[in-house]
Image (cartoon, rainbow, N blue to C red; front, side, top):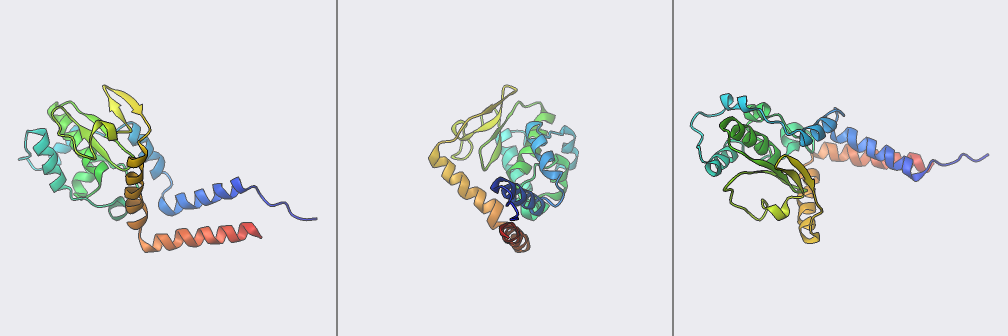
Length: 198
């Protein structure tokens, strides 16, 4: 009697599970990140860990924090493709990507009583505040997810902008991925597909 081959959906689930374990060796990091995305981690007490001479003006403050926390992909900072960090961890590491800057900036604004909203596209997170100058990456029509007046919103992007966001995701998720993790990921996929086909 011939053995029945499992459904392709089952193979997809196994490949997805393998991808998750390779990308997030601690599988709890991804759910924690998602939780923090919806309950944005703001800690006003983090100002105690920052330089005392930070500017009062929000635009100059944002620039100062970007200089204080130079950009680095999450693969290099945390060893995972995506991290929504704790503001204190960002202040201690002094490196990170847009989420790192956003949680730190939001925490300082909260400590100073300055209102803000969290905005996100498919490849960028930023903080909007009264008087913020809009850039090509940080403007209302590039925000696909965020909070406005305390309410969550979600909208689909324009196709042209989606292409640019996908290029950015490729750079941050694949190109920045350590070679050893790429080999582990691709090798595991190949082995699982071969075993499934038997």
